[in-house]
Length: 386
Image (cartoon, rainbow, N blue to C red; front, top):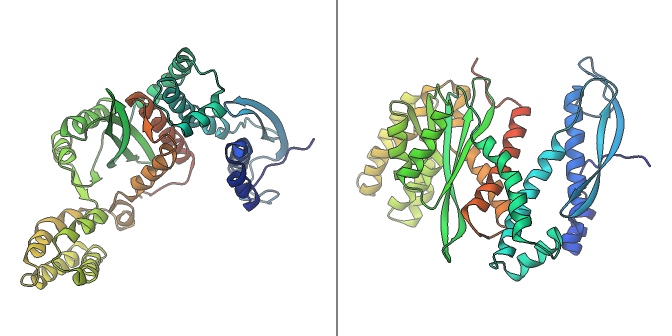
């Protein structure tokens, strides 16, 4: 048999997934991971496409080797790319299965604790079989938690830029469903690469949670921070000042523009106000931005006095980025990079819905962030400090 990679998810496969539901998941996982491993080999070889001739080519492709892996979806046979020489083995296989284990454990815990819905029970039966015991779940969780905890506590280094944000997940505690705050931090190192620095989960986004999280980053070796990008959450603001006093702060421009909407007196003014704020943020220099801000503040003094006062007191917090090299402005004026990470977390955690406990939620989120961080470390440089 000849093993070949699948380069894309075909419409036929997606239709099959829609029609067959969970029965199609093994095939989908096989294709996705095979494609990721093939991309890894191309990067290792130093080319952009198979059979490409290049003076930068580091080695030659040498077919595929079958590897069968037992998953909770059954046994899946992957096609592992080979090279003629060198020491190459793709990491996509292990990374792809790590979060699958975390997700499965979350569902299994719900099943064991008797809080699962009919839908979750059906999924768990497909993933784990009908005989799911608390002992089985605890043993599997302990093995995975050791690796995840090691990643969360790994040593850090110098990161000039720090991006912070929080999102919420539903967690069951003492018979009640509560909102747990998931705090995340992205660092941009001197090499210009992004990395997920850490994650923390608690049933509060209060100052004490943020302060403990930021202090843990420092205790793990985080240093050299020149700028923090975040929204203006009260707890985060107080913790940031306590732990990183004197470090520059860039308030997220996207959230600033959203916050301004609460001070606009009439619906028909919203488009005009949004355009005025965007013009300030898109100015060519800090001096031009300040001149535009003065004009906008004066423009709305009579027609929208509350808005005018708010603009004068808040917009300057979104202009700190102008002190950085111009090539960094677009990438650091908002928390959008971290928002996209949160979207990926949301896409995966909504399968669970309500987590049976905090540990289950932290386990799945950590596994997802490990995948993202691994991809960043081997991906393109995010920005340059030259």
